[in-house]
Length: 147
Length: 110
Image (cartoon, rainbow over all chains, first blue to last red; front, side, top):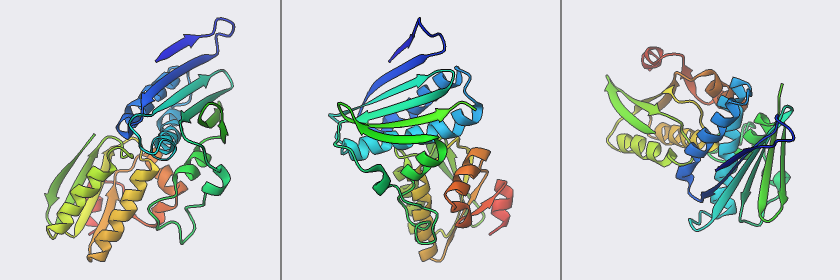
């Protein structure tokens, strides 16, 4: 992990991780990133709910879908925190997906009883912005503004 | 992360020690299904020591609830912190599960 303060802007902190593709790593990664963000005065609720759940969902999607549960692959996590917001970028080695088409409402009467389909919805509910793009891999970018 | 199982009268109580997420959800599912297989029908999952649950963990709870009901049983939940209550409200799973504020109330609700 590299954590470097940009000397040009003391309010900008970047956390970068590259981790093996194993869902058993997720809890530890989430704890590590959430703890670092908490130290940067992000609200407690965001660090106990929004960030852990949204990051856990993004990592889970990256490892199981993007990287097809292939233990030879890796996932990169980049967290950028400044005085305005947190931006999390989770990159896998897959070809990507259509964010809008894959997101469904799990609260409808027919969907609430389903076992799956809540991950992307929760990311949208818990973050201010969810984006997906391709940049040397499939990237999901989650943005949470400071209150 | 671990799950411990104790019996309180006719109710099987599962204590979740830590987060319920994609990396451990199958362990919880298997433990509960093993008890169901043995003939147990009343289950209470206690989340006193759980900070958050991801969508895979929520999915396992939905799956277990279905399987237990199919066998004529009941799955109830207890001790959700404010973050967990928010997750259940956002996903409307609070309409699917009977949720008790304390373990005692959960046990009494059967």
